[in-house]
Length: 547
Image 1 (cartoon, one colour):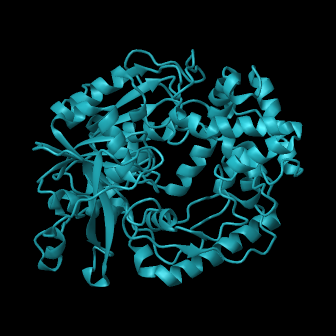
Image 2: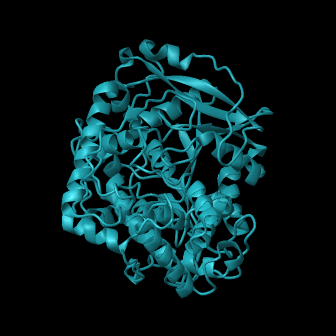
Image 3: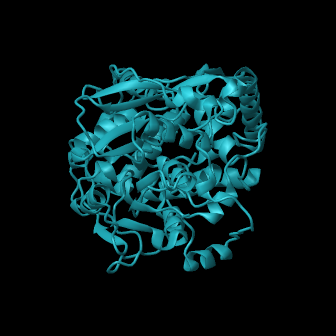
């Protein structure tokens, strides 16, 4: 069994790692492959066909299929659902299998696998790359459900299109509105939603491996997919072999709500220290000013104009949604720069400019005032996994929204407040096992902060190694053409060679398809040699947005 090293156990004990006697090991988890009640799942035949296009790829180099899985792995009599998987269009005999999950958690893995094949084709020399969707995805091809939002009372803090200025009364109104919405959704789809859990996703992964005829599989998880693949390694350590975790959540003790709080602070710091400076160096694209102070001043004008309804139907939330483009830098040309540029131009009051801003704002940020329905998949996953864990008071939530104005409002509502089922994550399994993985991590990742990844690394002892990219401010390393990262990743996936110690790579200037930056960012602690530095101090956040 993959147990903690002595040093890791000592460190874990400091934060409450409890190991009880007589507990089942990961080796003892049954995958039901020899149980007649599950035979039809393991013996199913797949039908491959075309894949739908996505935001990032057109699906032209892959095929897709549906895999039938039990809605509840603990009780196959509850019925079946399907999940989507993808493979390369031109398959050949492969010696190894690589299962890929795109994270999100509501992202289709088909496009992610296709991108991996295009950006890192050397991985395909010996690996069959299979994208595996989580159950219930919005943009996936498997079984989905849709639920209607409850009638709005008008008192919710998003009703004026500005979620960043809540009051205690409006926050309670929004919480009540959400509770009514999710309660009706659960009554309608209880069996399906109860089955959306990380342990069930892991069993789906294991089933895909078996149906494809492989005894073992390698894993790659991006972003929140890191938590899935880490848990898979815990559940079936003898089945899943080489594990690559790109942009890491805190998977050593997976807690979705607390992860969101950490992300809000790091995202805000990245906007201040990286994104706004980037905008100032690309005024030809953003048209917001040539210094960080000018950019922030222009955005303050946009925020004020939308708050006062002087930019047509464009709301403050839509403006803030455009500003929060820190994660996937390579895709800025598609939406972020055009959105901010059109809003800056609309400050002159020209009806034509306002109309252009309205058009692009409509696809930038979902307007909860008019959206009739939602896919509950990600909420079910988070609530089933770890439940309600946000310790903040109402006053603290409001204060955090004012400090972390980019995405702080996304943490206001406790989506799990009245969840009917207990969390399913096995904390004993987490305490008794460790994860064997190669971790890829950018220092200033705004979506999966380095501070959480460092906890994973320290508690994994010698069973994990981190490829750390110094002064890199993006999310998802697979999009960056960093030779240092690729060398370590390919050596591990193709040859099974884990670095003998952590690897420090240097970040490259930020870029998108048409914008090439000239500098990297230096707002953390310096990395020296092979030693991992402390995480950046989020207390550096100081640029406020005046309502």
